[in-house]
Amino acid sequence: MTADILRQYNVTVTGQGIQPMLFAHGFGCDQHMWRYVIPAFEATHRVIRFDYLGHGDASLEAYNRERYASLHGYAQDILDICRTLDLRRVILVGHSVSSMIGLLACIQEPDRFEHLIMVSPSARYLNDADGYFGGFERDDIDGLLDTMDGNFSGWASAMAPVIMSNNDRPQLSQELTTAFCKTDLDVARQFARVTFLGDNRPDLPNMPVPALVIQAQDDVLAPVEVGRYIASHMPHSTLCILPVMGHCPHLSAPHQTIDTIRDYLATAA
Image 1: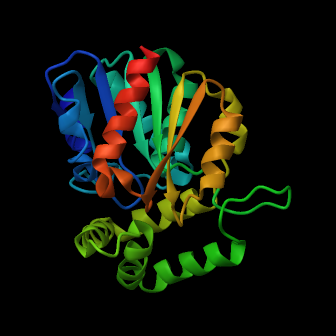
Image 2: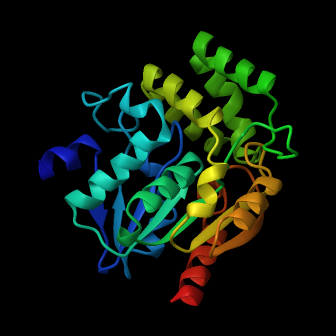
């Protein structure tokens, strides 16, 4: 069973330390996206990376539409990996939607986690009549999902530069486009709906472990207002707004991302 789980999620374990750092990628990405960040922690931590089913080099055989009809199915993936490797005192680092997936995992098994580090999180992408600003109206999201259904590769090519927001480095947008297009189409379509139509705001007050919220100053998917909302509604949280652009600072601004995580962990120790 252990070998099956590790192969299923394409789990990679490196590092010389004892305390585990588990890195969870965002929608349409894979573990390779963390390659600029993880070397900074391999001397001091046990570093674990993986791919969600249908992403990267993970298996697709175990994918179940019912399980992944909500983010709880993805949180179960993280918990399955933690149980398989018997991970304790985990520092969980999640990008984008994996920040909310990580939140759900921490709520379900709080004794297993020591910190959650959220990189570019959003608790809800849709604006709400109660004054919440998520950055998108329902028509925007519906149009995005319709485009994905009709022409996923075209959507990927058009959205990657917008998401990355570093036009002077087109290779980053190309990498994101390639990762999107490598994702299984049916998985991507369902994951997109679960991600962009979800609402994890009610879960924020239930966060049982300390958290760091890393937000880019200019992020089209997760505006600064979203990061401030998350930090203000989640107990024991710290907000750091990086003076950078884009939704993927671990790729576009890895040194700032590394320094922010290191400073937080040093202060929290």
